[in-house]
Image 1 (tube, rainbow, N blue to C red):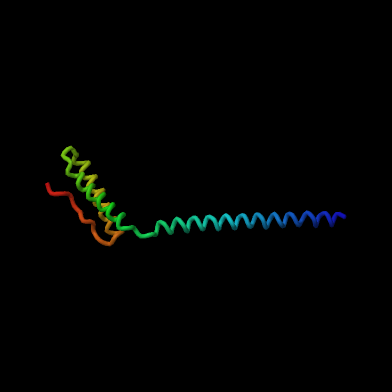
Image 2: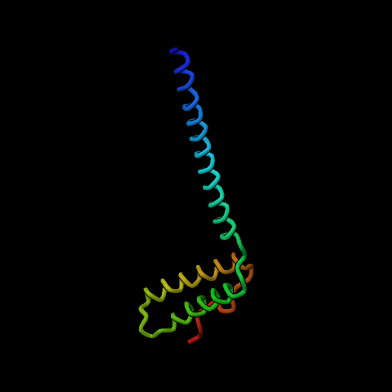
Length: 105
């Protein structure tokens, strides 16, 4: 009789192992799907509105350097930031923005 009861105990354990394995596989599939969706949205090309907005931001950055109250240190920091934004724009869109230097004083 002990053999019969031990065979009954083996069946639920096997079912639990399959259920746990199914849960793990399902969780991994869910994580892969979430990452795929995130990568898809990140890799989407920028729209013309995005490009125009970034160009406006670069132009405003260069315009901010014309402020008379800006110290030399702040001006250098702002210039570096504007140059970095310009370089990133060129890498992203393949052409320079319309404003690439500070306005002439």
